[in-house]
Length: 104
Image 1 (cartoon, rainbow, N blue to C red):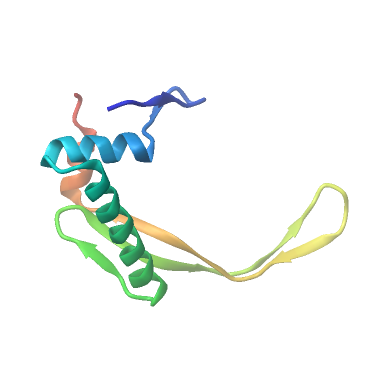
Image 2: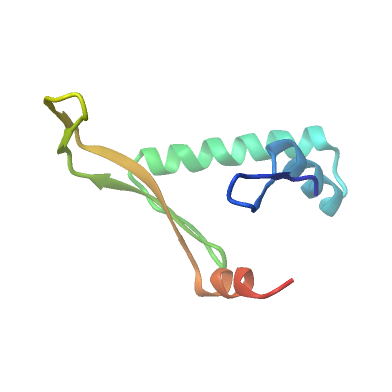
C-alpha cells in the first residue's frame, strides 16, 4: 500500500491507496470499492448524527460524544466562549487493540 511520511515519522495512507488495497484484497474494481466506501462512511455519519451508536462486532464502536462549552482566552486579550459541541468517538474492541499492538 502506498503511503507518505508524516512529520511525526509515521506513514499516512491516502484514501486512494486504501481503496486500491481493499480492491486488490477482495478482487473488485476500485470504482466499486470506492462507491461502497463512500456509502459506508455516509451511513456511519447518519447513524451517529441521529445520536445512535454504531457497533461493528470484532472491531469497535462509533458514537457522538458531547463536550460542554467553556471560556477560552486568546493571547491578544479578551475572553471568548466555545459553545457546546460534539465529536465522533471511536472505541476499539480488545481484539482490535491486541491486533494492532502486535509487531509486523
